[in-house]
Image (tube, rainbow, N blue to C red; front, top):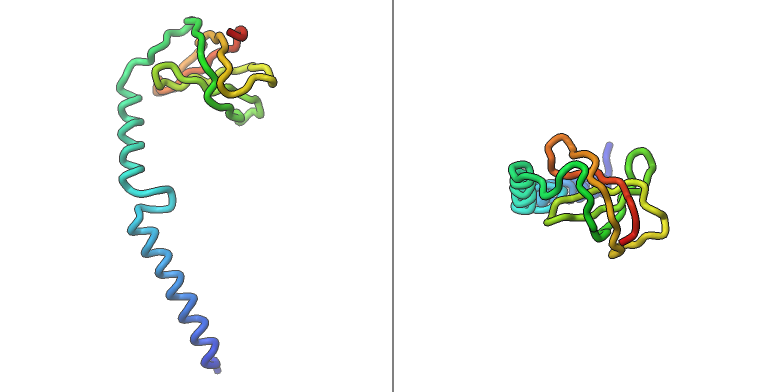
Length: 123
């Protein structure tokens, strides 16, 4: 019914599959080690406990550290104030990472772990 080569190929496939599953379980899953996830979770809990270093309506000079695409398709600048993430909307397309801008804090996310700001001008 089955040839010896089919049996050998099937056995090899099963061994590789189980080895991959075992390695993934030992390393804590697909997205890094368990200790990496634990450190990330603790940093998130700390961010939720602390007060934001900015206030609504406040104008701040911030450096752009990155850009993100909002689900609406808009490009937002990612900035940080004392490690606190501020997403700045309506940034001109010619800005680059490292540029310093002036932005007004408009809102906080639900947990107050990040804020949204409006671009006002280049600094």
